[in-house]
Image (tube, rainbow, N blue to C red; front, side, top):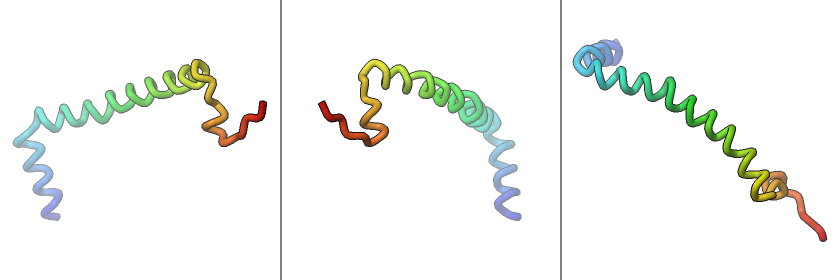
Length: 60
């Protein structure tokens, strides 16, 4: 239980830092995930490299 007590002490001493970390993990990571989900299909369509992700061989 010492770990929980130490975490509570740290949270009370560094409230701004913990709030920033909380906001970072809640919102910025979601934003980056959505951005990646939007970017990836556009990248595939523009470069026409779908075969590299599906491991298929292209024969002309």
